[in-house]
Length: 457
Ligand code: ATP
Ligand code: MG
Image 1 (cartoon, rainbow, N blue to C red):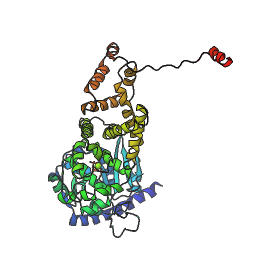
Image 2 (cartoon, helix red, strand yellow; image 1 turned 45 degrees about the horizontal axis):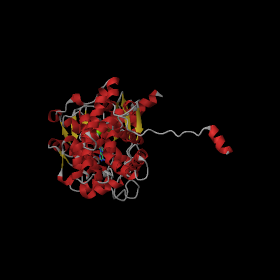
Image 3 (tube, rainbow, N blue to C red; image 1 turned 30 degrees about the vertical axis):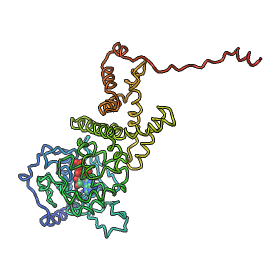
Image 4 (tube, helix red, strand yellow; image 1 turned 90 degrees about the vertical axis):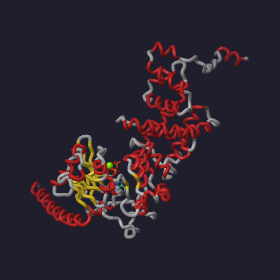
């Protein structure tokens, strides 16, 4: 059994050795090899999990490189938030090498290799997509959008199908060299985001690349190259065709990058904010709504840059709050205040879901945050004591403070709750406002005897 396995490994190594020499032949023609003394990547910023993954693959006879955003970030001297590895090993082979790994994905088949809490995403070099050749094989749709991408190829092919030159860099930890096929290192140094190939075709293949251009430019302070930028406004409508769940994931990355304000400014400049959150463009056109959305984004950016966590539910609740307010007003014609709020929340979430699938786990928290808002106006009796112990109190309180800051409700309400939260129970009782809510009258039950009497009369 062991012998059989070892034979297999050696055979793979031989095959891989051939592949390496072929790859080298290609590289000598098309890739620049950039030595350590030229790129000066700070080794301390590289995750040991990524190094171990490359080592594992290389020891089994395969090629393995750290690739994509991580190399770009390392060149910019940022600590990458995640590491991807590219290899000529196929998913099943990668899966066999690492005990703690699993194959994932349909559109792209990848392997997740787990090291403690860290996950390294390993992808097999992808082959080139020729739109004309593949038109009828179901891998692209009528607008050229790639639906499946599991054709494996060479290292050079893999570089061509990446989006931006800055993202098509391959770092080999063993030699400490960066392989650069598309002048990515020079572009990164010039702080330029440039599409590989013809931008219109590349956006048609995958419209999400437009959002990636915006996000990466905002996050890294890179300027979008002119030819890369030009078609975006014209092609913005292609985003309509992207599955809502993918759009949601990309929006989440964009808004949780710590550079949400900058991202939204670029989204607007590129006319990409229409149709993303279908209601966002409407919100941004109302002065009160815009102020609120921007404050919500600023709050998220600050938290992330301070290294705190940020709850996506809070952010989406903030983005859509003014739409809820508008719907709430209308709904109050048909229902009492609180049921009307619930109807308004459902209406806004449903309208939203057609374009952008906000995960259910976020929707329920968003609704809780919204539903708690009227309760901040109730500052008499036992209600404030109950509200402050609610599990979502903190998020709802932060949300209410944003409403004060944006001018939607009186700042005095926010101040009251801040003081109330810090006060002891005696002080809290003293702070309560007089209870002016009309007392519910209990209907008196008619006395049994009276009924009897009435019946007998
Ligand atoms: P981030 O810093 O946000 O992780 P990233 O560029 O690493 O940015 P990922 O989504 O992690 O983004 O993707 C890893 C790499 O995969 C990219 O650098 C790029 O080479 C490639 N890639 C990702 N999305 C696309 C796409 N839509 N089209 C082409 N290549 C892509
Ligand atoms: Mg990445």
